[in-house]
Length: 174
View 1: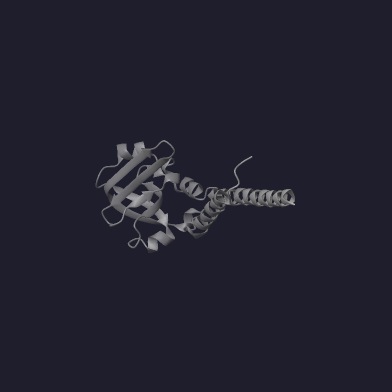
View 2 (view 1 turned 45 degrees about the vertical axis):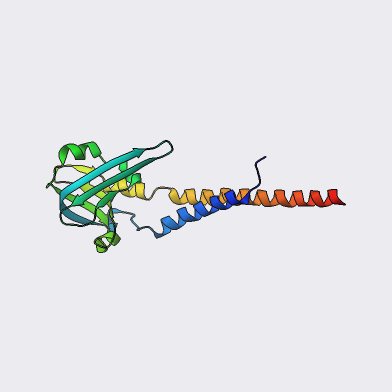
């Protein structure tokens, strides 16, 4: 029998609410028609990975001469990005076509970074937009509901256990 502590149950529920909220408020990108094309010349790129004991983080950024802020390849899209082909093909000053959300397109200078859904040059594709969109719209909202359901069940069981324990203590006292 597990230790009855509703704090952990509430954490499960809070994580679930966070997942759902994040997915409800992120840019809506369901198809290529939800993207805008931008073109620019490569100034710099940085692809770093941190392989920690418990997690694996990606920091993939591309900087174009025509824009002050970087373009990010998010962690859920990093596995779909052909990094080796990019590094072996693209040099500073090469032209790139990138696909970004319409929302990002209209706010391109005011955000810290812009998420990119597609990257190519005239000859090669490095990040396929349809694959990236599918990854972007992964099942993370379902994880939110799972966390809420599990947290709610555990909280219910904890409350039920506490009530039962209180009744047993009252009976033992009389």
